Length: 271
Image (cartoon, rainbow, N blue to C red; front, top):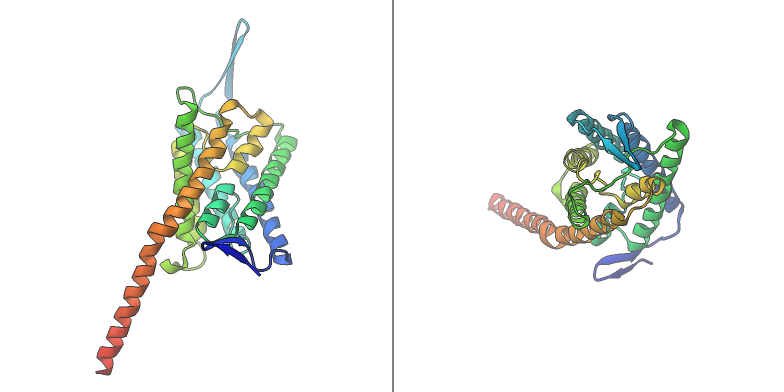
């Protein structure tokens, strides 16, 4: 028997089942490919330049517009494709911020959100391990650009993740009458693409604590890494609550008005 508190799911009706194992595997494999394709695509960007003057070594990345575009395409198209792979099994979440956003959006239990988060971290780390074994490095680690404070980086990650969470909640809203098939992966892929175009040169565009942890655990978790966890998770709560209690009520109201109009039309036809 499932458990709910104030409409928020705590435990599902059947918490332990073969279906759950299938969903966990889908999240592991999906997040693995997110890292393998997305971060693998980063490997083709312009190489780093290392300059040593005395005892000081400075490493810079010549990030051109073409390099940013390549990274945006790798993540946007890669995530869109992987969402399409497993959207009918686990929802194709691959992101703790999305999972907890669905919880706050009353679409996922908190227990399943936690389980999926663990699966996503495992899948992300496995993707990094395979990249390390095949190409000798884990490209795509995130860091805040010079001139941007940790607090500013946190809010950049917050607003970027908020946009993503709202996009996911909108595309999974059955009241909108979306056709089944490609609308969800396409919308999410486009959102990921434009967010990378904006954030790659500022924060590296984490917007996913599992992805950020997996890549940065190999490069080293620096002091400002909190921005890549706090920002997205805060956005999951704000996005889920905002969509559920403000925007989703529009569709309930619209459905009521459409039903009332249909009834009035039926009455007129009978008259």
